[in-house]
Image 1 (cartoon, rainbow, N blue to C red):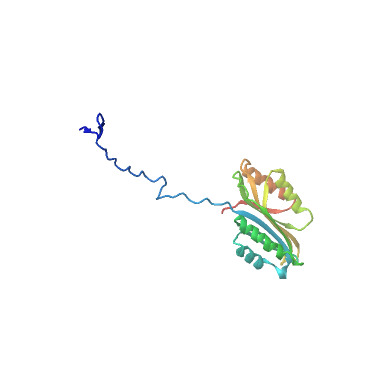
Image 2: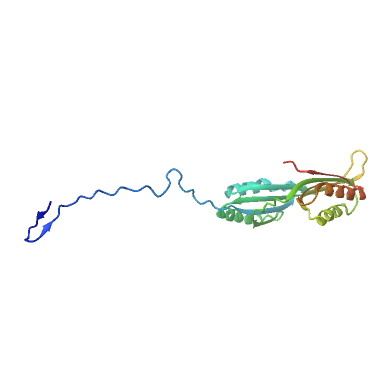
Length: 215
């Protein structure tokens, strides 16, 4: 329907009411909101050497916790009259910085030999098979060198090593004992390698075993 305008010769149309626009769906997912960005943990390796009676294990563990870091790994070993600690702390950048400051104060102790530095996570090598090697023999110089040379020739990595000499309780003989955790390349034939290693040990009059790590 046309309506006459207020002025002659003009025509006006009826006003059209506009419906309000519907709100669109939310742009975000309310059920699964985006997770906050998680920072990568930094790592600090701590090594100490002290007289066995003054091991700083408890003190260092407290410093790590007070700084807001986690104790990711630890090694404690007493050799002779001294104790060696190797601790791996992990945490946010500011927590590691706080721990470094605390360690700098702790290192002022003259009897405490302390070294610390930042490190990173080790890249896992899926082609290395973990094996346990144990060797026992009458003690004499050079045994450990020959065993490590054998591993080196076959590109076998030594992951952990513990060795000692002792007096046999029954006879008083001087004995040598070593325990290795090694990484054997997966392309090596295990049975052939074991035969070669046992033949090598026989030539040196060593009693040895090589078994897979089962955990």
